[in-house]
Length: 238
Image (cartoon, rainbow, N blue to C red; front, side, top):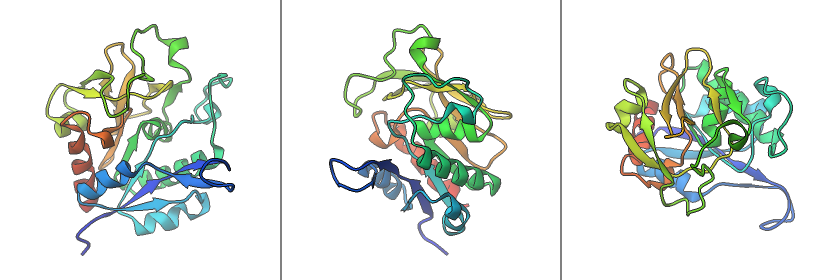
């Protein structure tokens, strides 16, 4: 029996330039560190949609990470693409394939930032393509201060999985997004909201563990952030 559950972690992808003259994968270390500290064995997953099921045969849980890009609005009936939208089709194709596969197996899934938005789309939900065009707010969801500091608070919905994990009604979060979940999908729930009503988290009670948060708990800007990883890893043991 494994002492550490293996958790697949999706990677970001970059075009040539900077680090390499060839296309390359990238991901911040603190995603992996947070999982390892919570008792998991993280495994990076390159973007091969045709291998999604083979990856899922080897892992116990899936972490869908964030990045400076957006889910194609054609995938959720979002209409014309907003000028601010940036796509990474290869990454999204893979993440949708592996996330849908994980959900079909009832494998634990944790979505962070853009991963929360992708989880919502995989669950049949929709997104707001550009918050400033849809919601009047004074909150800067692309916070100007460093990511290792909080940008605002969120309210946790009572009776949700997230509420059971966090154990308090509010927490501080770091926020780095211009899009947000509009609807969480059939059977899914909104579990956290910003003071302006922007959705900050989703989950699906019909799955063993299908949880998404819009912020970055791997930075641990709130004392409750590590609890999310602990609960996720514990679910992956089951």
